[in-house]
Picture 1 (cartoon, rainbow, N blue to C red):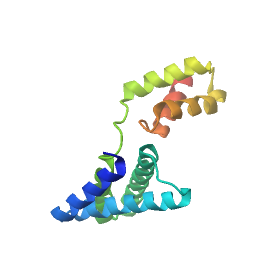
Picture 2 (cartoon, rainbow, N blue to C red):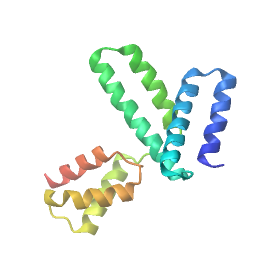
Picture 3 (tube, one colour):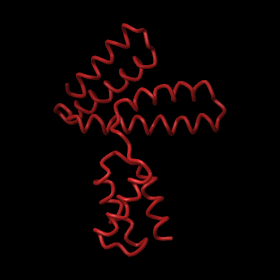
Picture 4 (tube, rainbow, N blue to C red):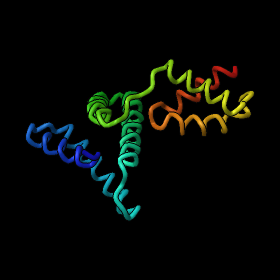
Length: 147
């Protein structure tokens, strides 16, 4: 079953279960996908759909942070619940050890010698991690190795 079919099934299940959080989140995701398809002019691949889910999850994390700073705890809870729904569709994230091993491997492959090679390292890292690791965390690991 492709990604969009799975989303449709999840939407139906959420409607039957009267699960408002899942319903709202999946509808938002389907709308993002439809908008992107219209912009692109063709159906999105599963990888492109997952990229949209990652973007939505990142936006939820940022919103949680901002709402916490603003003391809006009721909105924090809503965003956390929606984030939990989105995380069901994301690929399994790399562990800390896996990220460190990947960083060391990419540094060796690129022949990087210091922070001046950060762009080259991060470009290769992001391709290798392919959405399975947080770019910010990978960058921190690289900085840690070179400091």
